[in-house]
Image 1: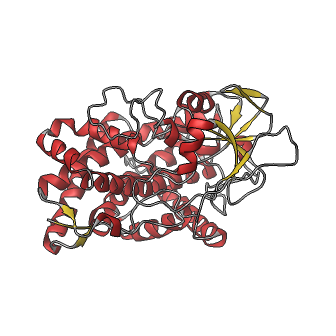
Image 2: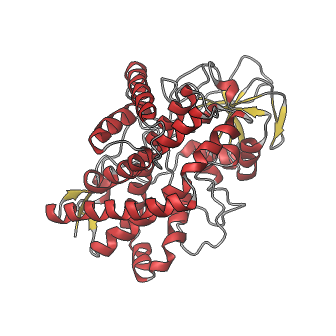
Length: 409
């Protein structure tokens, strides 16, 4: 698949529309159209493979933060519109917090915050380390030539977020299957809608069973929020589905990309092993550096004419921001194409910005630190079992990552 550019000709005064075919990229390659727009056309019009019409794409760091924060750009207004997009289907469930605006968004986010208090995160860190130790025991028993995606990167975040949610261990394969279907651009509309319906029914029942249990699972927190009238049922279910899917899927791929980056940057890996204290900073820099998704995430609608980066975005037009290009903006990150563990100022936006900043960012950091730190503590000589160019990468994915990561030690 190639990235091509076309010009909109309905009105000679209209700016160019870039058709973005979104290539299936390998490794840590950065999307060439994103790089071009960041430097040459930072507030541009684009058309993606699905949906209707065009949208604006904002790529510079300060402009991305502005659009993410300004209430004149609405997520709620997107719902029900066939905005141009990467996936053939509309991914979020009805009532998803990602498509709420304040004050509804604030109300829903407050519920999520209860599950991510410091005490709960300390407990989750201990649980996550126990899960990781068990997975590494199994990896060691298997021996070299194992696929890290199978033994570590898929089961680890799935187990941790399921523990947070209160999903029983026996149901976790279901979560993996539904999540893979919903989050893929290649699965198709019918399969995705069916998986979303099944996921919705599951969480409706799980939350229903969690009323008055006194447990500290997110399902119990959501049940309490229903009981006190803070949430409606469809909001609670959509929130559960969002955290379960993104918590498992995003961390699976991001952590695998981190491992791949370290395995293909031996000097950085040697530094990390020699100075374990640099781990949190290294994880933050890996989060900035890795192009973790294909294309862009969720759009917003301009509620009035708004000037962004010297360009007026008309009322009613959809707008996307690229956190990937914001993380490569040279005005904020000197030498942005370089992976630099000594980068002291690193205000990356890999978890988003503003009201829709990822509520699970603290947990994701904890998981990444545990995974990266534990792998080389247990297997100091861990290395790729095949040449880097032979690693196969997922196709048609919204979140980028390897299909398999064969390793030896």
